[in-house]
Image (cartoon, rainbow, N blue to C red):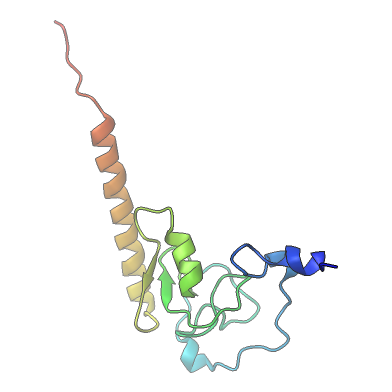
Length: 139
């Protein structure tokens, strides 16, 4: 007999669905020095302050317990694992997550955020210019 509870707990890719994820029983052993500066606008603010804040640590996605968080989400200011970062970038022409080689400072996070917003604005403007036909008057 197939255990339907276990079967329904996994996505087609083999990841544990959020409602079946077990809460961590222990907090991360990372020190505040490893966490570094946490951006005031980071999202979400987890109970474990190190989740998504330590380079090469635990992914910022609530239902993910993956390690090797080396991608910065320029909107949430958190670090994500490769699987979650690729999922967030999948349908976006301007990448939301970018690979980083260390935990960025708050100033660097702000610069990445402003660059992303400028890229999105430029893309929106280019699309608008392509779809807008010039107006010709008959007078």
